[in-house]
Image 1 (spheres, rainbow, N blue to C red):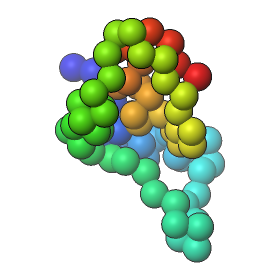
Image 2: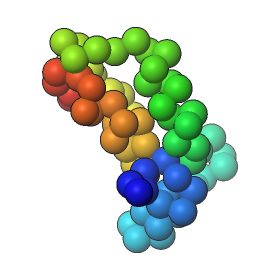
Image 3: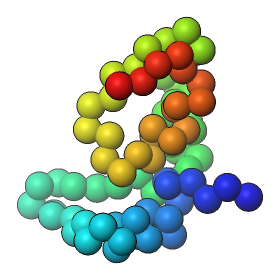
Length: 74
């Protein structure tokens, strides 16, 4: 079974590995629910011909799920 970046354990592992600490004063948060990430991508209605510009991708929780379904990503 694939462990998505958006799973709580994988997110915690990445944050620890790279020394990333959340700053509440900056309103920082990370998506830690793979089902929610998949729903967000589904609701966006992207398809194989789309070119996506992702701003503020964080650690890649949505990117990982989005990439296989689009033509190009920046």
